[in-house]
Length: 75
Image 1 (cartoon, one colour):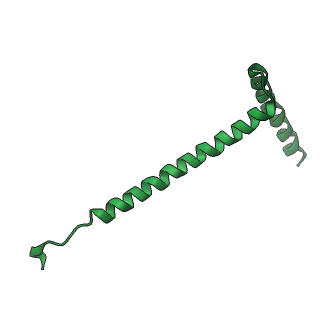
Image 2 (spheres, one colour):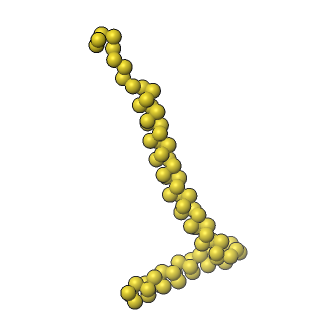
Image 3 (cartoon, helix red, strand yellow):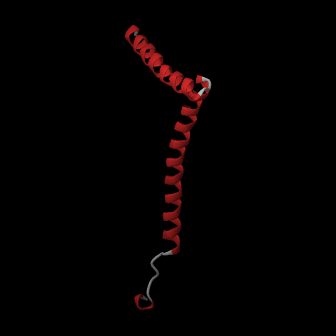
């Protein structure tokens, strides 16, 4: 378990350092950069799911509108 925490600490230090350098270059706080990355991740995942739901809805509507009707000659 100690290896896990040391690995976690390593990635946190390196990841936060990247956010800190971006924030220093832009002249803003690092906390704002971190939260922006989190929000962008959620928006990106949510956008893909929304597109999936829209396409599923569209295909369902298409199937309802263009159902194959039986011919008069099939009776």
